[in-house]
Length: 200
Image (cartoon, rainbow, N blue to C red; front, side):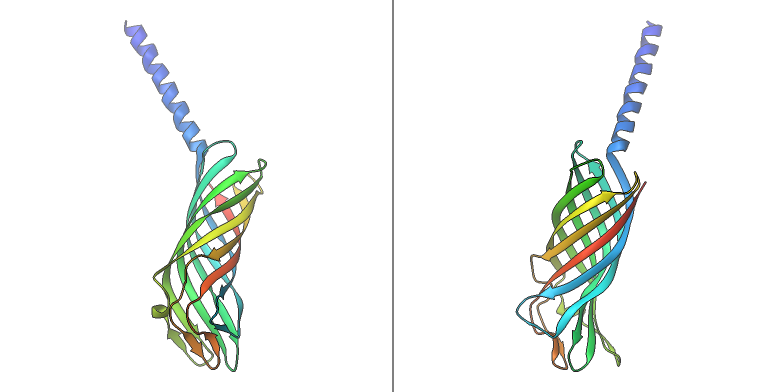
């Protein structure tokens, strides 16, 4: 009887260990960083053009099956636009973005991905050569976007992804407009992202 109990105990340990290892293989965490080429779109833009920003944050990937995975992220992102009117001006929007991506693996290394995103404004700034102005109050507290993209795994731990983010709701509800340039009212954000992820 004691021998049977010992064998049962060993079997349970083996099963639990195997389950834990299997779960660890399914769930991975990592860091992410990259560049953002962002702009706004809408009916209230004048003399604006896209600008380059950056992003950095954390992510997790959970493999649902051999082909599908879910990837939530928490990303700091510097977005905005430039103006080329009478006076050069940058409109910078600092966001905490939380995308939830569904990934489909075409091969072991290549995936396509899509998913919604909510972004919370941290700081809005209007910058000229003369002054910096806090315009956070011109931005909505949160905006909703949708992401489309593709990824390529360079190694087991290192990967690249390219995404396009389309604004679904307005990011702004009042003007950031000066010297004949800027955003005169409501506008939605859009951007391209090139990111690199390091998993562990």
